[in-house]
Length: 157
Image 1 (cartoon, rainbow, N blue to C red):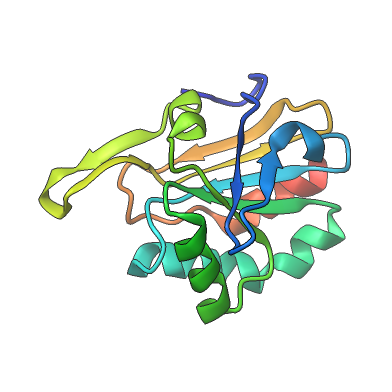
Image 2 (cartoon, rainbow, N blue to C red):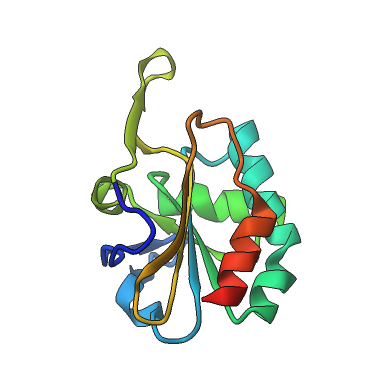
């Protein structure tokens, strides 16, 4: 599992829009801190709460010069609908292949719900060089991060 002090694994995926734009983490490093918020699934109550909470604090992240990305195994179409329904202005990244989820050591299954290969809830803050300066991984995927600590990490990166 990726933790503080590690070089963040680079990955490519698709932005959660109907345009299916390519996303490459590498292209966002060097322009200020990057916040990667992995979440299990769009339209679920805990994930909605987390993404809306990040949206509510987006101004604080922007003041810190940080770029926020939500990352899940949901399709780009699902993420686009989710963003629109909840007024989420930051980008969501569709990792349907699970490459980033596996690289960050976050893959989990919830067989009772028929979910396999989804992301555990986790937040990583990366500095300009792509080093992880903050990491938080949920012990229970219904838990939410300490948003103040994430903002502090972004401000310090």
